[in-house]
Image (tube, rainbow, N blue to C red; front, top):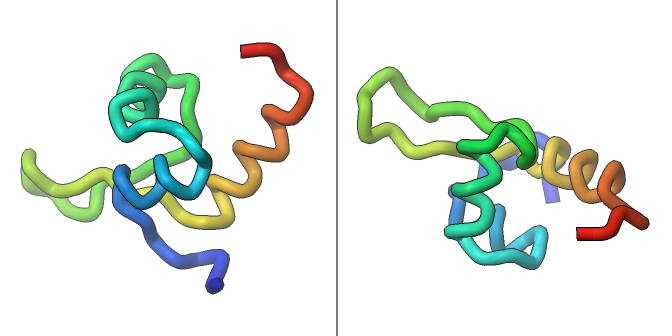
Length: 65
C-alpha cells in the first residue's frame, strides 16, 4: 500500500487495532498519531497518512498502556 495513502478515522483505527472512539480521544488529548483535516470546512473529515500511522505504532512498541 502507498505510504502516502490517506485513511479516515475509522480506517486508521482498524489499521492500528483500536476503536474509532479511542483514536478520537487520543486525537483530542494530543497523544495519537499525526492527523490533518481534509478541508477547511468545520465538518471536513480528519485524515491520517499510512506512513504516520506506521511510525506511531513503531514508537509505541514495548510501552505499557
